[in-house]
Length: 246
Image (cartoon, rainbow, N blue to C red; front, side, top):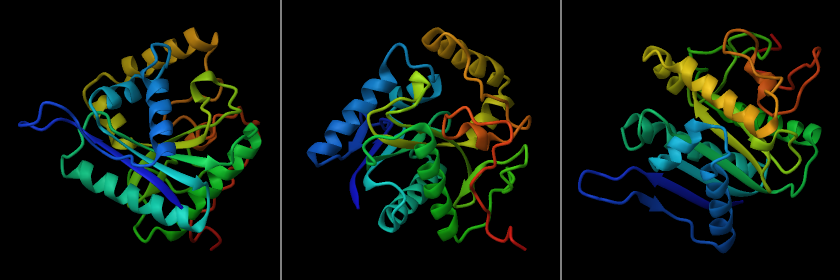
């Protein structure tokens, strides 16, 4: 069951302060505050997420449990709203993100989180009645794979209490959905490499070493990066695009 929705928008021409809708429940307020604290920490590596918060350009959905039928329906609706409102210019086009946070499971090991993350993504895909994004491949073995929903490509970042990477550690399981088109805009502006290298340098400063699963889009399937676990060389992604069985 959906617990809370937070929609934070940039200030309009007539409004000086960002517009924030929700949350209403106490647990929603607590989780929103905790995630905001993580993102705004000086040590947090991802400057894209920090920019989304600084510019009030994000959605947060808080749900009782990951990978249930009701959660999937609610999250799917929120993803559609996010894509639509961003296309309408209600969110800034440089950095914006959607975060789904789940109260249950309360604690996970990396392998357990990987399982439920892909279960949730599979469920979203199974009910998606739009085509796959033309910008990425639907084959998780393909170097150009990228998760798609509502015909929009997303780079997925998972967070949870048992993450080995400090930047991915959060008291609740969470999935962030970051639109691929934002990275393509950075490439078009000629600043993607600087953006990427800044994040990696900040991650090394935090953890002492670079995340071993990192690769650039097109070099290897980004599916290997989604959960945050350092997957084995022969790891098989537990995701099956519709129609893959022939």
